[in-house]
Length: 228
Image (cartoon, rainbow, N blue to C red; front, side, top):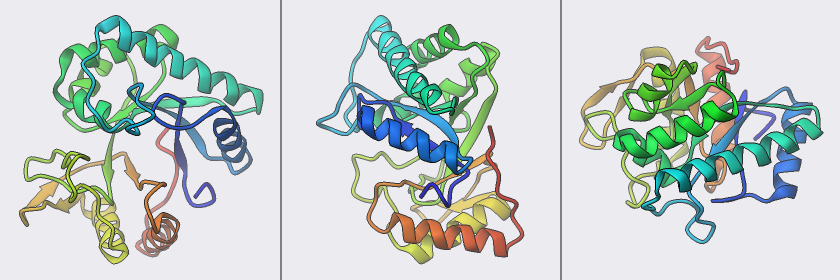
């Protein structure tokens, strides 16, 4: 996957990952000139960060700082750096509308590095507050996630949240990159203007999908480079 991507979300140990995996990931990213992002999530290893947690401001603030520090320390040890932040799973979904949790995440990122870019969903509370705090903000779209007609993602708790058919993923990726739109689960067309196009690395067939997506994007004349 690192040979195919321009940026990588690296889990920081609370919802997935461990020190050795983080070390291997940061080393591979550095060697292959892939930008590293801190993939922060809820403290939920058993549920892979897909379960919603009702956390206080201080709890979430501390957990985000913990994850940033852990990944950043490992990255620097191998010559890499953490160049953006991107929430995962249930936390990602919560930060679309939850102003209190968004404020805790933005405050933690700002306390750690006031200039660190934040990647998230267009129109989300997270990006709104991050922009107000002076952080560079970038929007993303998913080639392998299902969308509702209002442009929000189908929650990962639903079976139809992930798109598995590779042909469909490739078609969606090219359409998102060249036309700025994606077909929602009800058949309507949603306008999206992403700075970054995402593919999950842990789903079955992810590498095959990434190979074909990259080839299709290049064939369509899309220049591939990291947003950060």
